[in-house]
Every structure is written in structure tokens, then in C-alpha cells.
Length: 479
Image 1 (cartoon, rainbow, N blue to C red):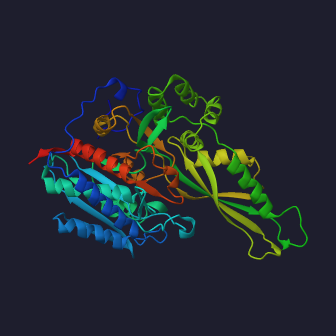
Image 2: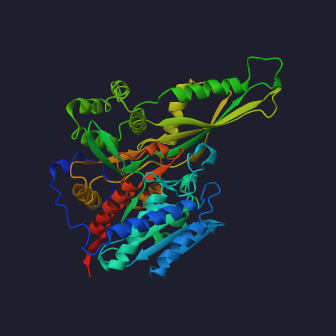
Image 3: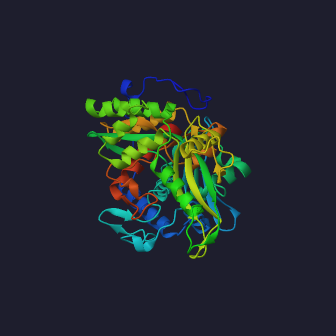
């Protein structure tokens, strides 16, 4: 079994949780004030949501300073960094014996925009309604920030002995590429985040599949490969239509990109996700999942899944993707412009490159072998896809915690179709997993959408599970 700290190798299909007996270790010390801890975590999350850290522009500094103040009032030293005006990250550390290298508890403070008029409740209110906390960032990822704050405080208050340092980092700019957050930290102050293991966002989602609950832990993520598409045409007066209108040409290209699918590529993580999920499912559902490993049967299988969002997620885990998102063309209604441009959010799988993605897009659009074509494809931002080994002491700790809190559930590795700050840590040898446990009733479709909210029951569940994981991996007992 691949252990933390070893170089990543091609993943063997080794025995895992289904063949291993996980004995649930002691969870909460008898003195652990669970009711008070849940109440405090809830209050933290409400306050975090009330900081408008919409990115752009971010403005995370005030929120980072508030977190630092919470820690410092309880004797936990915290550092706030501001690499650009208003862009703040906060890092805190609890010292262990040094017998083992640190564990990083990572989250981000910035959030994507929210249009208040579209929401049922104000997106920066932190309102509790019908047992749910409402607000932008409750799921992505201020809920995780609140849990990590509480874990740090309880370790300090209870005097938990640590073999590893615990590092807390709530960072800026994840939603816009990490330039002023984790990327800046690893490039400029790497000692602040130096660790062996990291827990981050991007996994932990509870999925109801065929009547069985499966929880993911994210071991891999796709790379970013954003494209700018520029189409040249012939300018003219709009009262006289002609056949070389670049807006029309661009519209056809975007329709093709938005309604077509790129070729199937089966990564190691995706194969393990399907194989280990299948082992927990009823035969009929399991057979559908197994069919997704074959390019010839994948679409037929996905079309039979009743949940379209889950089908789209699995589809995105097995292909490079291209989603048109931004369009720019003329400035006057009565002028056919000379050019029209669009930006396309492409994501690439482990083993793929920006060049291989460009080749797939050009082939889809029929641009290969046409050097005189009026269509230009330009890479505007790229990052590599990354994978951590799926079977480590950290994954075993996750499995033990889940065995205690949901014994019937299955825990499986997962490839997140998006990108997280974990991509800056894995190339430095860090085993980084995305694991923020959420119950199956959480509506994850609200992430980056409207009415984002987190049930209090799921917040409590996540706190209990993550406390067990951290105590298992980093602690040796209570003094």
C-alpha cells in the first residue's frame, strides 16, 4: 500500500476498505463539549459569511484578521499575510512534538459573486432558516473554514498531544487561480505551509447511489486550460447582411463546443472511483457504473442514470471538457464587427496536456489542416492536473472515522472536475486530499449557483468526522 511521503506511482488496484476491517478508535474525549462546539462552529460560519469576500476583487483581509483575532485571544499564534492590497490569508500553527511532519488544514476565504435579487435570502446574511445556514461560501468553503477553526481551538483547549504540528490556513484568491493565496505562499513563504499531509476542499460529498451512501475523498483534480477563441470576419453596415459575419461564425463554434463531448480518457483515479463504488452498489446499478469505463458504452450508461447532475459529474471525470462562458463582439447595434471573441473554460485530465486539449478542440471544430482559417485558439491560463496516491495513512484515518459515524457507507477516491489549491501542494510531495464531509441531502448544485446553503445537521456531521480524522492522524491522546 502506498504510504504518505513516498513518490506517487501508477496506482495499483490494491485491497482497500471493503477487504479491510477498520476498528473505530475512540472519537471524542469524554470532556469534548460537542453541543457547545457545534454552536460555536455555527456562529463562526455565520460571521464568516457576513464578510463579503466576493472575488473579484476578494477583499479577504478583514476576514483573515478577524480569524487571527479569534485564535490569538485563545493563545494560538496567527500570521496574516497581505501580498496585494486587501488580499489577505491567515495561517496559524499548533506545535507538536515534531516526531512527524505537519498536517495542513486548508480552506479559502474568497467566494464567487452572488446576485442578491436571485436569492431567496440575502447571500451575505448567514441567516439560519429551517435548519440551514444560508449564504455564499457556506459550502465553498467557509463551512470548512469554520470547522477547521473549531478543531484548532478544541485541540488547544483540551490539551491534545500532537505528534505533528497542525497548520491552519484560510487563504485568498482560490476562485481566481490562487495568485494571491496558496500559489503566492508556496512561492514566497513556503515554510508557512510546509507539511506532509493536507486536508482541503473538493471531496467528502455524500452520494445516494442505488440506496447506498458513498462518500468521496478527492485524490485528484483536473488542470485548467482556459482558451480564448477569436473569429475574424468582414466588418460592414448591419443593414446589409453578408456571409462573413464573425458573430455568426463564433455562435456556430460555441454551439458545437457546448453541445459536443470530447473523447473519453480513463485516469487511474477515475477507474478506482468506479471500481470501488461498484463494489458497494446493487448489481443493476453497479453494472451501469462499470459501463462508464468503456468508451463504447459510457454514454449509454450515463443516459440511464436518473440524476442528471451526477451523470454530468461522472462524464466530466472521464473527459477533457470545454464550456463557453464569456462572449465579446461588436459595440454598436448597426455595425457588423471585424472580430468576435469568446472565452472557454476547458479542464484537462491527469495525463493530458494543453496541447492535447487543443488538438481535440481543433479536431472537433474541423480546424486541423486549415492554416488559413479565420479562427484563432489562444491559451490564456493553464495548470497541470494532479493526483495523490489514494491509499495512505490519511485515507485509512478517513475510513476509520466514516466507519464510526456512518458504518454502512462506502468511502471511495474521487477526481474533482474542477480545480482547488491542492494543485500547488501535490507537486511539492504533499499528499493532499479534498475531504469536507457533507450529508447526501446537501444540495451541492448551489455551489457557484444561487441559494447556497448548508444544513446544520451536515455541519455537525462534518465537524465530528473531521475531528476524528485529525485526532487519528496528528494526535496521541489528551494530557
